[in-house]
Every structure is written in structure tokens, then in C-alpha cells.
Length: 101
Image (cartoon, rainbow, N blue to C red; front, side, top):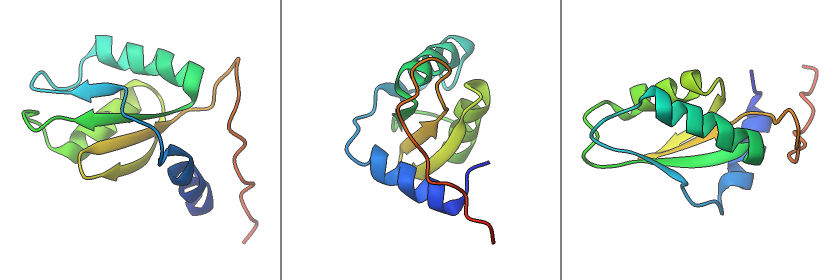
């Protein structure tokens, strides 16, 4: 699980990214989560936009995407989902250490 500090850091990193996937009328499916998982392996942090014609609730879509790709849901803002998953082979993002409370 990500800490609040780590999520804030990731949100700032994601700010300039453009969505690379779209969820439309068909909703979330296995092929999509597989592609998202592969993209996360390369990029670690991605944005996905939920289109207006998507029939599912945006919170459900965001959670299904995160679960399907085994990623962390960093943010759901408007119709944009931000997902993070540390890469096994090309780690780029160095998260701030979780502070000991």
C-alpha cells in the first residue's frame, strides 16, 4: 500500500502525462487489463481516461483496472485514472520513503 506522501509524489509525477488507454462502452475486459499491465511494466505510472459512454461507475472502473493490472490506484480525478506499479525490469520512479510515524 502506498502512503499519502507517496501518492502525492506519484500524482505530481503523473500530472504531465497524457492518458494512453480509454475505457468506453465495453467497460473493462481481460485484454485491456493485460495491455495496461504491460504498459505499467514499461512506464510504471500511467493515466487512463474513462469515456462518457462508459456504462459503469467510474470508481468501479478504476478499481477493476487496478485489480486487473495488479497495480495501485493512485488517483481518480474526474474521468481520469492514475495507476502505479513498480517495474520489475526497468525501475524509473524512486518513491519517497514511508516515514515512521
